[in-house]
Image 1: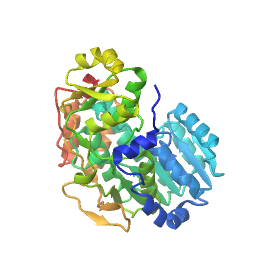
Image 2 (image 1 turned 120 degrees about the vertical axis):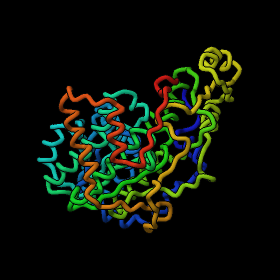
Image 3 (image 1 turned 180 degrees about the horizontal axis):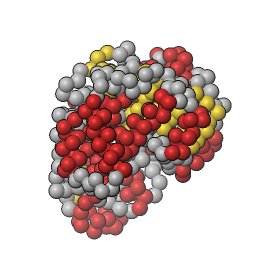
Image 4 (image 1 turned 90 degrees about the vertical axis):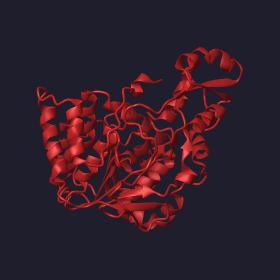
Length: 407
């Protein structure tokens, strides 16, 4: 079953914006972005994902001299190259892809041979709240979001540093209630600390859900439709959304001309821009020619599929927002943070203290011991407590219910 309108058009419907929120900033800052990228060597980590790919589409017309894209998803890299070459999207840029683990030994060898780069962007992440379901999953999340990100910065410094360094964060890092958000907040503390990247202007960005990004709830809507299965959505829940193109524009702006030592956040208004997820699900099924029919029981939604579809309806299961790590609302700014103007129309900045971040680094040292020695088995509760000791704002929302128990 194929959609009757494109994902871009669907994203426009969901965000309520026909024109990108960041289009004007990209136009006004075009010359500065060109100066930051044209003729430069650029390294993009995690470039085969939705946000990384969208950002590459913003960078390529700026004509870097060499663009290296690293991603452990070998199939994703292959499709990225095929897509760019089939659409004349390379703009004559020397593109090189590398299917390696960005925190593994092959990456270290590559940087020893190829560094320095002028601009480095890191999109690699374990991004799902559901990944905090057990100790092994949590260790993988912390290894990717914190340890390997730190290791990458060390290797870059050893190779001569870089001019600008950007690593994407998440809205869940603001007043985190889940371990994923806390891991990203720890990453922020480590990347902005004194001496982390002595020669680089360091920036980051927190932003909203990217509509139809790989692995997202909206992406799952399309997959459920294609497989002939009911949709599932948390009831009475609102979220901010940006389109894939907007995510790329935001990251390109933050990485190339964002103010150093700042996290950039979008100007999204809760009254105007929050979207009810049940309405999103209804929009998606309408685009496929169906009227929504909502259910509150999983068995009933699955049993009704054939009959509902025959009537031109599509079953949508509404679930309670009661699983571990779920936040009732979205925010971009922590309790002890203040936004400031940074010269952009639709983006503001949060200044990050350039302190020693000793407690965060101490946590990482202990975490390395944990990862390297299987017999050092701190429980999930102990690891969570250690993170809370570093992040007083981290109020873990734990529940007996988990996302893997839901459709």
